[in-house]
Amino acid sequence: MIPLKMQGTISYMMKSKTAHRAWAVLRLVGLCLLLATAPVLGHAQPAAGGTPQTSASGYSTPTSSSTMAGAQQSLYTASGQNGAQPTQDSFRGSVITGKATAGVLDLSLNDAMQRGLRQNLGLILQTSSQKNANGQRLEELQALLPTVTGGGSIEVQQINLAAYGLSFPGFNPIIGPFQVVDFRAYLTQNLVNVSALKNYLAAKHNFQGAKFTAEDARDMVALTVGNAYLLCIADTARIEAVTAELATSKVSLDQAVAAHDAGTSPKLDVLRAQVDYQNEQQTLISTKNNFEKDKLALARTIGLPLDQEFRLTDLVPFQALDHVDPEVAFQQALKTRKDLAAYSEQVQSAAASKTAAWAYQVPVASFSGDYGDTPTEPSRQRGR
Image (tube, helix red, strand yellow):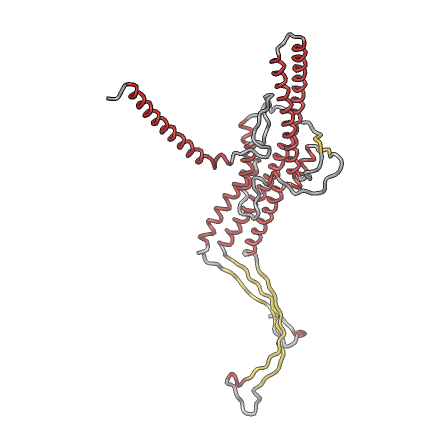
């Protein structure tokens, strides 16, 4: 017979083991869900600028929008098989030109845009892909165009008639040596070649899609540079706000010290005001560091040397987009979006490639001919 107290202890132990087993199962399920969603979450990482941070004063540090990162992802996957492809990080880098100067460079938003359009690595790679697609188009076009070649030869020959079984009494079987001159032009033209025609159409649509993607890359460069520039402007405004809060905290600290010295306030109020003041100091240091990092990200985007000192000259005010009709904006996007046009060209290119796959079974009709002469001397040449 087990005592009542011992029974209660055993029951508690059994319940505790069951609860621990249940928690272990829940942790295992949660780990599996986290691993399953990790690849999806990997595409939603913020762009250059780090993870969002919140200061002690309540201001959140802005980061690059994940929407822009997704647009960059869609851009370089839409460029097709056109050689060197831009990646998501390509639009955050550039080809650095020039050397840093001793003075401070005044950088306006328009100047930053122009530098980005010239030096941004993503746009350079996409332009290279466009040229590669144009080269593939010209290669496929060559199979549809006439091919003209020419050649010439001057030979000295000697023929032995006896080797051919020809023998005449009193006649020398050796003829020659004599000179043979041949100048000739050759022409080849495909009359019916369905496979080559479909391959050319596929390459043509692929090149057109690469052109639209390059134009979309220019818009993406403008978006990336504008985002980096406005992020620096926001950091400047945040530094001013934190500096004002630091001054307010200093006044509060001085008042608390004066009240404590006068004997009307406890030491705890002084310590609380001192902690608030030190927190604001730390927030100001963190905000200034974020500003310097965002300036480096902007310089890296537009091709400035990283050790070049510059200051922003444009302070873009906030302007709300009022009176915007969503349906009108959607219809305008369908007409003007370059990425949508590029996807449409890729669909047509894939359809033409599919047709070219079975068109190899269709017979090919071609024409070939040559024109030239074989006189004994070049001065007596006549066409035939």
